[in-house]
Image 1 (tube, rainbow, N blue to C red):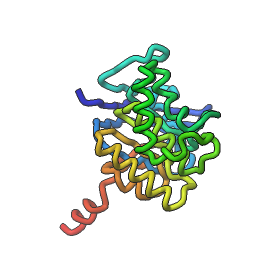
Image 2 (cartoon, one colour):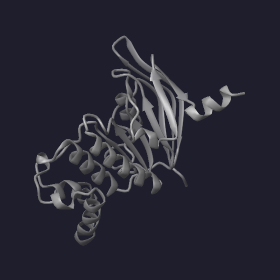
Image 3 (cartoon, rainbow, N blue to C red):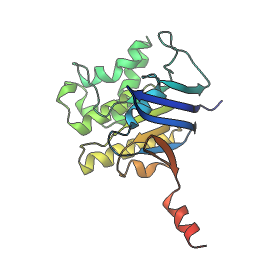
Image 4 (cartoon, rainbow, N blue to C red):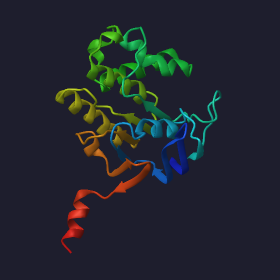
Amino acid sequence: MGLELKVRNLVKRFGTRELFHIEQLQVQEGQSLHLKGENGVGKTTLMKIMAGLEKPCSGDVSITPSHRRWWSDRLHPEVIYLHQTPYVFMSKVVDNVAYGLKLRKGNRHDINSKVQQALEWARLEHLAEQPAYSLSGGERQRLALARAWILAPRLLFLDEPTANLDRHSVSTVAELVRQLLEQGTTIMVSSHQSNSVTELCSRHLHLEHGTLHEIEPLIEVKRYAQH
């Protein structure tokens, strides 16, 4: 059964200020979505709510098929959210990549094999023994993607994954995201501007003035304008 995320009447307020009210949103497995909007409109908050990391003031987010994690009924084991500033543990790169699998208490040989695959996939094998805190911004982003990839997520939220990266790093991150999409991972990318990562997305959502609108692709707009 394909994974499906549904949002209904989602409201988030801070005090008396309503950040947004999302009437509905449906995301099917295998889709790629670009969530755009100016800084401060609530993109990060919306993605965290959909990932189960924050609670809305009202409304509902459901993911089917549902799988309950033993410590939370809101977090789904096949849904991963990556922060804009990737968090790294005070250990080696290889240990950072292995962290999620070790939590799942897998076989040591299997873990080592998958970690090596993840390092090669993210082009980090030459940095495996380096302290993770010594990595550059682009390398940290690839480390975060490797930690996600190794857990085989079906839905991956990327919060401003190219912020403050140089052109080469953006291109490398885009290639990794493209491969995730080809593997069937559903991806939502938050970014206030277009780049080579958001260009991979087939659906484009705009969060503005507290409401969410789906934007037709430019090619469709041009086609209709000709008639």
